[in-house]
Image 1 (cartoon, rainbow, N blue to C red):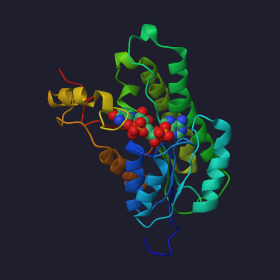
Image 2: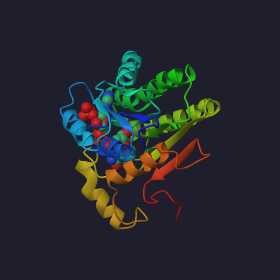
Image 3: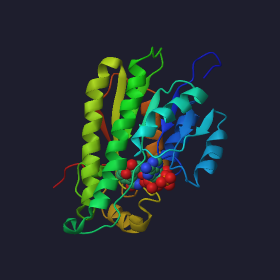
Image 4: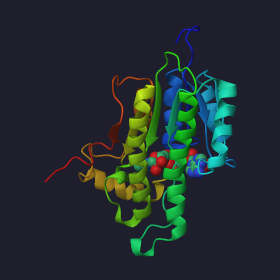
Length: 259
Ligand SMILES: NC(=O)c1ccc[n+]([C@@H]2O[C@H](COP(=O)([O-])OP(=O)(O)OC[C@H]3O[C@@H](n4cnc5c(N)ncnc54)[C@H](OP(=O)(O)O)[C@@H]3O)[C@@H](O)[C@H]2O)c1
């Protein structure tokens, strides 16, 4: 990137660790300015900021709860005041279930938490971002919303039914956003990770690894957050021209139909 070009700016939600941090790092490598996000009391956020600052791009912490809808617009305003107009929203923040188990035992609390963060938060944050985009001239930079849903938007995990339902709904939000924002020249993608080694999957990753080696995934291994991060940065950089509304499984072919 030369000094005269305007710099793209990305907000990556849930980027204090895991897939979000890896996406932030890959975006910084592409020359994006990056706003990192986690909950207001997120102890990992300062070190994540330091890590991105090493790429010599503008970076800031934007700590807010994505499920607190009333705070979205002021959070976006604060980011734009510091980094410039946001070109790219990566809706990555997500939570798993409070307790794995029989759907006959799922609590309302766990259902509401999954939907508040994984679905409602990404819907309204996208809405707040899109309202800003339609109200201004976007210039020549590529604009996109990249949603991180899950293989569980499609495939059932019997012990995590409320998570699956929240991700299936989020996948539909992606499609509706793509339809609405096509005429605004904003691309929308749905990245669906499969088995990725992060804090979220740490308690079960050994079992997943074994199943991957036995053939659950076509590449017989679990994925690394950096692999999903690189995919997200490629999309954000516009390297899939003339595409939108796409679902991109990042799952080593796990859901390819076989018999
Ligand atoms: N790992 C996988 O195999 C896998 C597979 C499919 C889909 N995914 C999806 O990929 C995304 C990232 O997952 P991950 O594995 O990287 O998870 P992770 O390691 O648990 O990281 C989750 C991130 O989201 C943040 N977060 C959670 N709730 C938030 C909220 N209400 N507001 C703002 N930030 C919040 C966390 O910050 P705090 O610590 O501050 O809460 C953290 O930075 C999630 O949407 C997940 O559902 C992951």
